[in-house]
Amino acid sequence: MATKIGIIGAGGMARYHIDGFRKAGAEVVAMADISVEAATISAKANQIEHVFDDVAALLASDLDAVSIIVPNKFHGPLAVQALEAGKHVFCEKPPALNAAEVREMIAARDRVGKELMFNFNNRARPESHEMKKRIENGTVGRINSAQAKWIRRTGIPGFGGWFTTKALSGGGPVIDLLHMLDLALYFMGNPEPAHVIGQTFDDHIDNKDFKGPWGIPDREGGTTDVESAAHGFVTFRTGQVLAFQMSWAEMVKREEVSVVFQGVKAGGKIERLFGSDGLDETAIDTCELYTQESGERVDTVIEVEECPDMGRIDSAANFVEAIEGRALALNTAEQGLQLMQIIDAVYESAATGRPVAI
Image (cartoon, rainbow, N blue to C red; front, side, top):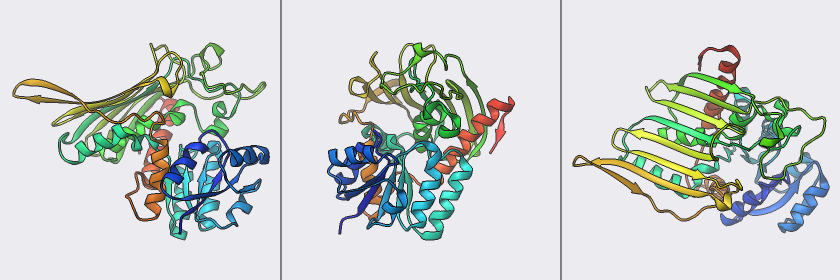
């Protein structure tokens, strides 16, 4: 029988989850949202039979798994609730507000013996798949250092809404744009972090000239208390190192999304460059490998199929395949915990002005 999945949250990311689950052969049978009107509209558009305005009612229905697509504050509590109801959980990024909440999620997973995965969708991109193959087959060798970047010039996702309210989001671009940090860790083999030094900046965070292009409405009288940019450095117990740069609003030429790494045998780069509209459909993706052969530099462009959704559909499909035992999971809850430990340390270092040991 097909795996039956319920969706918690009728936001924009739901369509990718639904498409991915169905691609893997699962049935999406229910949707819940605090706004029953939003859930009804989304369910109708996506041919989903059952609609709930209460998560407990959804969890009491005939489901094998749930997908969580809600503001970050609710990731942890809803994941624990769903796991304790006996459901596998696929949760949007970030894993939670902080590492402590992820530990609670993992403890619930272990109590009930279900799976917990996160939507680190860039791991599912064709570029990432091809690069990971070359890392695993020895072409790259040990990755000594990497640089993770997601920077925007005009990318604040609305003012006064949940994205800019720390109590609801956990932070600004450090949490929102964590994908390249995660992808770099994935390529490096998820080594154990040792120290983090980071600095956050709040320049432009109240300036509507720096608002992003997605049409997210501002909330008059709402809170805007998160950073606009962050830079930092991570050392690992293996001796590897990672630099990162993440921003919603920073004086850069254009939006850049990339992981660059330096391996013993080869270097590489995965990059997405956005045009002036800042939309995925017009972005340019590249995937390259750098080697030396007989004293000559060889720069190889790795050709892959286009993937405008940045792996979102295939990431959701992998969740179904993993819980059904048909594929290895692209991420583990422990890797989500490690990522949140680094993010917690970025904020602590920025607040104290000191390196933070993990």
